[in-house]
Length: 148
Image (cartoon, rainbow, N blue to C red; front, side, top):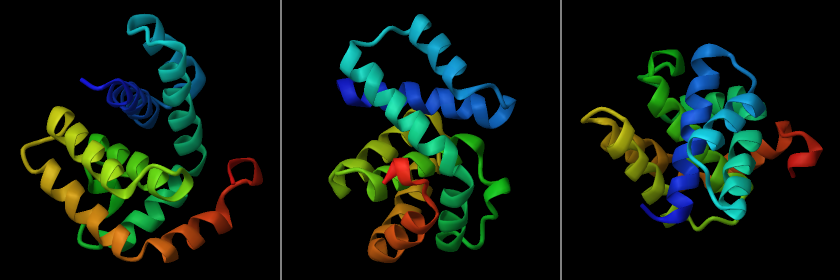
């Protein structure tokens, strides 16, 4: 597994745990890093994902719901929901190339999701990318200033 993929995987595990158990993101991240140590730069990347996605998760959900209207966010599998959140956050709040963000999300879906997860994630993210400027504007309007 590529190094940044490992960091994304760890961040996904943390966000999934937080989503289902409402544990503190910082504590969940610390526990994961104790179980699966990463080099400092990768641990920092995982931390950036967790602390970037978690505060805006509901805003990301609203944006994503627009692109998957037949699937209410609360009905999407928690793992798929968190993969989509990470990818959408990366697409809008970082300089991660579009292809990389989508490919990484699809790979996470293959590793952690159901049989249909990769296709679903790819489809939703394809729709997001087609209107990426609009999505960025919507998220930038609700993102705390420290995130921008």
